Amino acid sequence: MSRYERKEKTGIVLPFDALPALLLLPAEEAKELVVAMLQYGQGEPPQITSPTVASIWPTYQRRIAADDYQYWKTSRTNAFNRLSKDEKAGLTREQWERLHPEEYVSLDERIAGEPPEPPQDEAEPEEAQDTADTLSAALARWIAYKEYTPEQATLERPRFEALRREHGAAAVAVAVDRAISTNAKTITIEEETK
Image 1 (cartoon, rainbow, N blue to C red):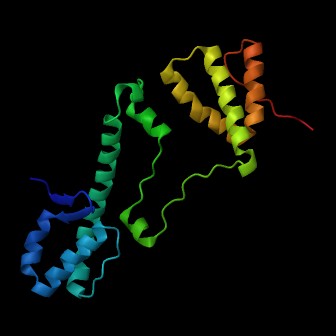
Image 2 (cartoon, rainbow, N blue to C red; image 1 turned 120 degrees about the vertical axis):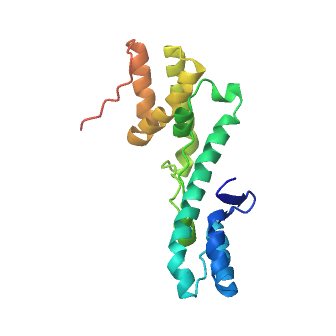
Image 3 (cartoon, rainbow, N blue to C red; image 1 turned 180 degrees about the horizontal axis):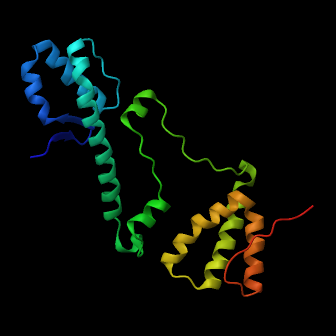
């Protein structure tokens, strides 16, 4: 039997080994501890008023936080395992995670309301489509030139996105065209000197 009970839809977590402590506490304090565990497991700040409950709370807080992190890791693994053979296209789980980054947000961060900001596209709104088209066309030319398999092609997009952020889509496109015309094995972006 698991040490924890989890209700999938609500994310509630209760450590089974809390039962002996709950049985020793007076009814009001036991109720306060259970409510605190449920609130914390749902990402809400627990309301603890009893000094006794406050003194034992850190033990259960650590256990619930560790379970939440493990649950997140398992969910990521399950998401990868549910992909079809075509969706995986020979990718390892590590490669898939690099292509689908998801940061873990701890219960304490969720309660504080300060989760990490998702990465923002740096392109200006009016330039976004042109930049995306330019980069996609350059990527397609490079994949065709290198005769990459679908798996290899999938791994190239993040690299091209990184080059675009650093040098701009137009510079990446010029570097791809130069590499293809000179039969180069790699893309080299030359910095313009003034």
